[in-house]
Image (cartoon, rainbow, N blue to C red; front, side, top):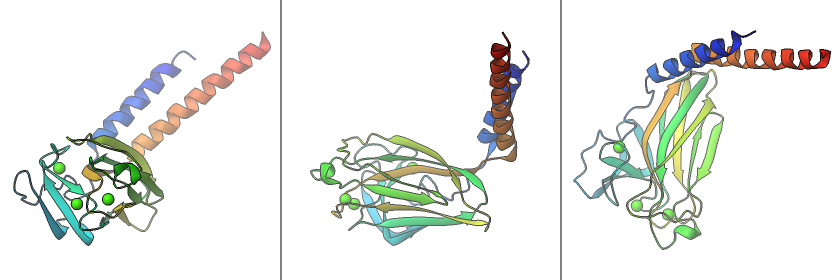
Length: 206
Ligand SMILES: [Ca+2]
Ligand SMILES: [Ca+2]
Ligand SMILES: [Ca+2]
């Protein structure tokens, strides 16, 4: 069965090409749709695509450059704040965003803590991470199942010390996991399992 590795490679190539083509389902995922004066910050009830609870802090290259473009969000506004966006999606999606800790005296005690949730996927990040200036951006990527209702909500929230300084978010995207990618990954998995089973079979017959 020498063709199996090349089939696996072809399946993974299809998967990779499919994921690159998927459009971002998030509106204003890089927070660039609002003009913020350079090297400063504003606090607004919401920005295009996103609702703040109670508000959203946008910063333009403050404490170092944004991860993408010039604007990013700091989640602790005047107090721990939350932001969300509801969009059309079903089934499996890939969530990707960048996050970073802000240097501050209370960071080790949890000033930068933040959480996210989308469908069956959620997590807590930056607990007790000290951070520095400029912000060191970290990439997050994960697969969420958003179910079959046709609507999904992505939420980011500040946690921990509510002290007006906290963790930051930029370059958010959600992309559908295309059917060909799912099928290709399943095919690749089956071929690997099949090849391993045949090897075990041959070894047992020696
Ligand atoms: Ca940005
Ligand atoms: Ca703040
Ligand atoms: Ca804080």
